[in-house]
Length: 333
Image (cartoon, rainbow, N blue to C red; front, side, top):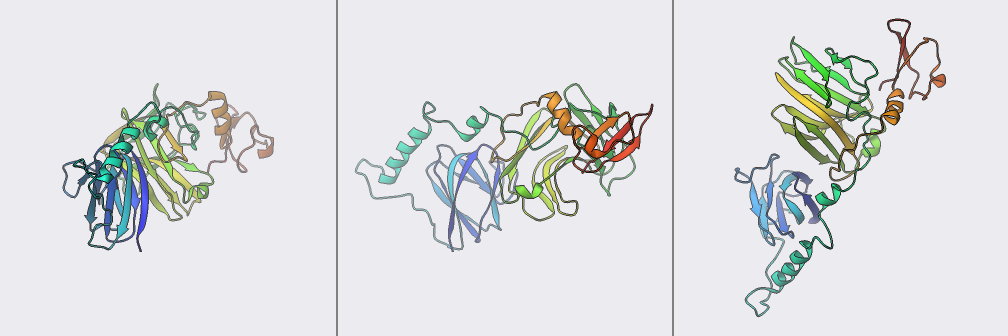
């Protein structure tokens, strides 16, 4: 069975699932596209094939998915055939070219006309989808510490976890003027993560995680499934930004994994129901505080019911006495 897919590329590496052992790809855009069996595409690396604009190639020996890098529209067809599925040549048009190429030239001229339309990535830069995260720029810090050095919740909605393979050492999440700095001086990874309610609503939908970390804006797009594990990830030398489905806790998680002896300065993180990253827009601080207080509040009384708190919390809170007769109400996920 042959199943063809149309994919729009926006300059960000994209994974596409396919059936069959081979993949035929036709580049309908105006610039070269690269295809590989493995992520982290480099133009001249082994296993990376280039597909010039207007051309089609057969990529042999895939295993469930391929990775694409480039811009514009491509057609993909997973199959088990030796012969090429796409035929880009046609009868001569009489002017030394082909009928198909003449039509393609007209299409490319239309696509490159920015006066009548723009690319997906360019359009995404013009607006901002709402984020599914709370406190994505770390502006709210009800717990009040300038630095957090142990497993547990830190700035509102963000929880720090040292993996089981990490040895003794120092970990910290420090508030900065621009966001936070995560420092990992252990011999294993640490994770700063936020759990997402109603994560099952995202199953089968294309979502995008993005962040500005160490001065670079990263993004990764994927389609979460009902399986525990990393659903999508983008990796750098300091660690990775990833989305994790955790059916045991009943939550999806956006995670910043920081590798051993590395640091990550994070300005903001965003998760959106969109096939590409749109601009990050800081939330109104007053409204963001209310969203945070759904999970954590500090009060001057230790006997206030959950329904009496404003705003109402997402579940019955655990009450902990703090210093000076102040009480913390926690309904964290």
